[in-house]
Amino acid sequence: MEKHPLEQIPYVVPRSDLDPPASSHASPSTTTTREEQGERNVNTDEAAQTVRVYGSQDEVYAIVSQVGEGTFGKVYKAHNTLSGNYVALKRIRMEAERDGFPVTAMREIKLLQSLRHNNVVRLNEMMVSNGSVYMVFEYMDHDLTGVLSQNQFVFNDGHLKSLCEQMLAGLAYLHQKGVIHRDIKGSNILINNRGELKLGDFGLARFYQKRRRSDYTNRVITLWYRPPELLLGTTVYGPEVDMWSAGCIMLELFCKKPVFQGNDEIHQLDVIYKVMGTPTLKDWPGLVDMPWYELVKPRESIRSHFREYFKKWMSSAGLDLAEQLLCFDPDQRITATRALETPYFTTEQPRPQLPISLATLDGEWHEFESKRERAKKRRKLESQPESADQ
Ligand SMILES: Nc1ncnc2c1ncn2[C@@H]1O[C@H](COP(=O)(O)OP(=O)(O)OP(=O)(O)O)[C@@H](O)[C@H]1O
Ligand SMILES: [Mg+2]
Image 1 (cartoon, helix red, strand yellow):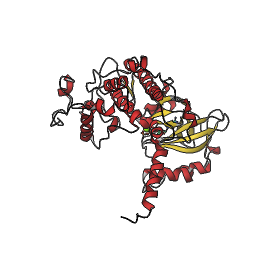
Image 2 (image 1 turned 180 degrees about the horizontal axis):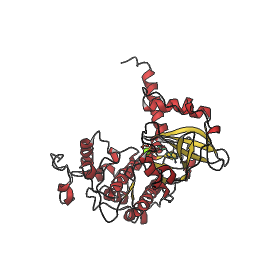
Image 3 (image 1 turned 45 degrees about the horizontal axis):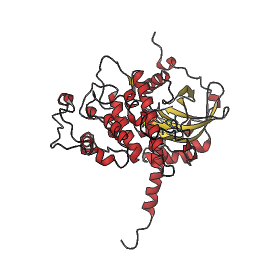
Image 4 (image 1 turned 60 degrees about the vertical axis):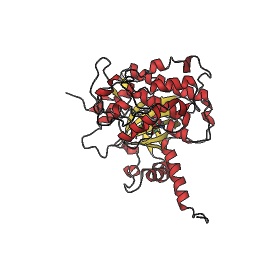
């Protein structure tokens, strides 16, 4: 007989007699915005009550704060009171599930259990406590969106090269293992105070057939990091989709903000064309075969402004690599392994340098905290009296 999905993964029997009351996990009211919810959660709910979660070898995890609010659950920083180590607990949202354990979470767990690499976040174990299922991860002090939103710590060119190299090494490993990530973006790239970068959030990832190209959904990858072939409707794709996202991240590392910020699929293509120019059939012979090619054909042809725009931030070897990552034709787009062999990494100075001095940065920076800070600032500005000369 087929095993229940949860039985296929090692997890721990609940010790509910020791658990906190279920009410401490109550979801905030749905009438507030996500940012307001985050603030309330940290200040009042779990963090203040030192919720304890109990693991296999008598570990006791004391929740310190909330660090993430995802589509599928909340992420907490927790302290293992026996070992003294910190972990991230990702609680799998079960409330809305009528059909048992969510299949997306199941996929994420199975994938993560098959991966082991310095640049991929480590899933230590699964845990069940008080009816909630938790994924227990090594704790990462920051994520890329968070760390790029602060201006106390400044990355030098060697640091940026190291971050880029680590991201590509993580991707090269995934692709060699036959996994496409399908959601590379700043908040899914985790960084610790030792300057190590690890790819996280495998909620959309999947195994792909190396030889046979399959038919997948094209509604993957957060809009700003989505490659043109997905925006043009293709459902037949491979690991090249992650490489476009990696190109977007590389530029973001240097400019500190996402570079292609579209509002919807059509606008996203426009924004890309304004920087990279419109693709020609010479650059991308398969363009005409894209399902929505006729539908969203650009009205005028634009030349690339890429080098002009980015030369003030990046070296010429850096520009060369970014341009190869942001190549329109997926078949010609550079692979992660080849990207690591380009002059940007092999010959050009400075050498990659782990940003270990991140340890001096005050606070921990995840997208979640940065959003909260922004909301706080906005509220402060709104509550200030208008200036007299207006
Ligand atoms: N191991 C970790 N250590 C520290 N923080 C983490 C860890 N894993 C995740 N986070 C934080 O929690 C956030 C949400 O986690 P994750 O991206 O895995 O969840 P998600 O539910 O899939 O989110 P979404 O679908 O909205 O991208 C991350 O952006 C990151 O800031
Ligand atoms: Mg995420």
